[in-house]
Length: 152
Image (cartoon, rainbow, N blue to C red; front, side, top):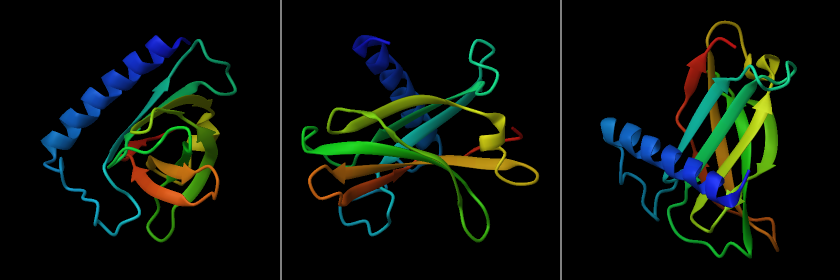
């Protein structure tokens, strides 16, 4: 996949994310002083693809936008997939290193239905994106996507 294709996908996911966040009235809710582990915004797409290997037929696309700009040569974006549960969330897969320009992260990867089937009944999946200082390993910012529900 070319860099141009990657950033076109990033732009499409960013537009979809902005529309969904606007629909729920949460645009601009995060601030630099926000104490939560998750800031700003992210989007998640999970789609079944017949052209992927049968062992991993689901394509996961993750986009995240940081609350501020970071130097992309001294930071990296890591993505982990989680399943939401009542008492504690299940780690599903990752970390994946995302394409990162200092303010936006994007990654796609294939997973199995077993990976996404995180509990009995409806599955609630989200991605956590960490902006990490390359030198120290310190997490500088955390971004969570909205939840995608389904039976995988």
